[in-house]
Length: 234
Image (tube, rainbow, N blue to C red; front, side):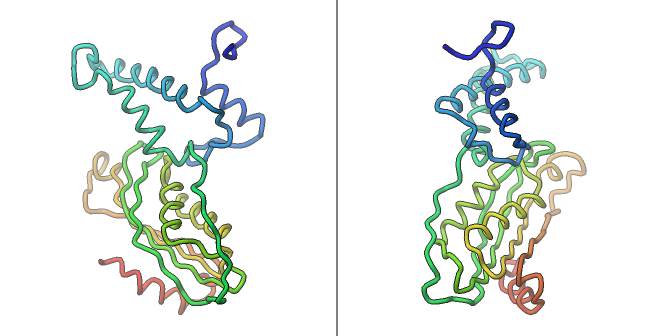
């Protein structure tokens, strides 16, 4: 039998998930991953719940979804897009990453990028489209991961409602925990459609920011080498 609330009505899936998170004293901000609190069948049930609520949004926008063939299934399409595509990094566990010992004691700068990223602004749910570069300075105790895993981890972090400044900080923390390097750097350049599409409507503006950890913070020459090699003008 499905759980019921005190009023005798079935408790929404979103409430059950939220209750689990709150009992664990964890937060569930827009850019948090909550996969560990989902049980089998929750995602499908959540999709149906979001579709119903999205249908209410369309009705409040005075869109005739009954007679307009273009929007008859829009509510469910949007729900599916959010849960399984655009915000999949919120509802799915981290991609598996095999770590290898640094057998050759590599300690030279490695750069991965540009990695294409897609996200959405947590303020307006407008797209953020861009690219990022990752610089790693390993040490003899570092773990090495496959090049494709940098991209998969970046896409997992970006696949949530985000602001760019927090997103690359999250990614940097994740990579430091996986690789344990002497230094790590992340630079991201992106178009924000909350600027392009609305508000100031400036279609040429981009946002570029960086996070530097470890040796990249202390060694100006290393930082300059990394920034010169990624060449943002390409």
